[in-house]
Length: 328
Length: 125
Image (cartoon, rainbow over all chains, first blue to last red; front, side):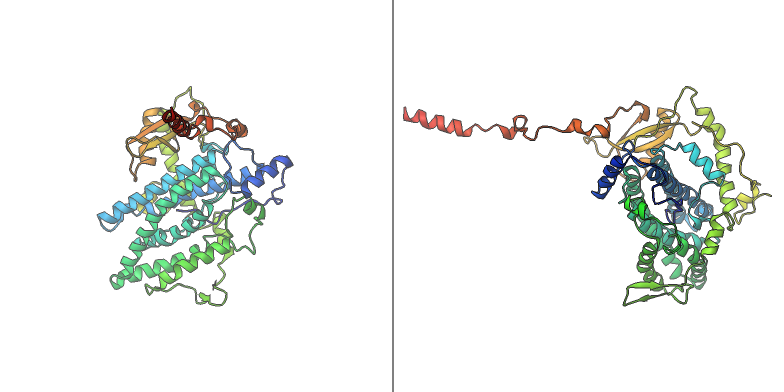
């Protein structure tokens, strides 16, 4: 899964710290020419800071994102579905490992990132603060949340930071399995018994608002990101990605005869843009700041795993080791 | 207050809502290793990424899980990140060279013209 709707820190147009203008110029011309930046290259402090923030949020989202689906592994309907869901959840945790490594190359040790997650200091994708109430919720998550994540990640994989792009390329290949698996699961329910159809319809109604929140606040109200876009940290605007998602997936939802809970939703054929009810950004803000249905549970579960595993990791730890930043 | 979840197994854990006051310490997630895989016998090993492990044996096990759980792979190397020496991108100019290097390529050596000329002259003798 699962990068989307990153929360960037307000910056004074990337000029928060005095930078060597000559180095900055060389750095920017490299990016403009499509070259990748590698860990040992010179980079502005602001670039480093925002990248760590973004990649770390992405990693946390993968880890936390595994939880709502993970609870359904023991109750998956049938052996094949159980195998597939286990594979998907393992992939998500694996993605987190790849992303933590990419963030580490920028100088933040893994332990610091995990501490920031479990103390509630770091953010992760807001959608995972909602519960997967039935099996059908896991189908909707696997199909539509992963679809949103792919749109975001394919864009980001063309960004400027080498280690992040390489991790994303690997991740995107696995995401395409998640998307197909999720679609298969939704189609199975939507073309099944009346009870199954009802389940998947209800799940779609529950998940539509978080899905609309997924790409983050509208460009009209979100933090200015011109510098981040010039530096190829942020690759597409939130609204553009939301439009792309609607364009690709609304027809696929409608062809199954499912109802999307937004009476205004339609495509304006002259502009090619989708019209929709503005998502409730107050609700988004409230949930991302800790007051959602599952925020406390997600962090408590993650904290518990960290605490329960601590003695095992400590037993294997060698006292004479020193930490080395991974190379790439 | 302990966590009430729709998943009864989580509720049974009696998890506290309050964040832990004892953050995990440096190196609790171990040392870093770089991973190289070989997709087919006869090919070169290629760098695919890094991971955290307490020792080389565990690094191999985790590398298999992380980098070889889906696609073809016949062999893996793991190397401690600390043991890799690399050139610096700031020194990219060490790879710069003279533009004309035909003297170290096969195509830089053409002899047929001389041989033909020699054969022709010998016939004339």
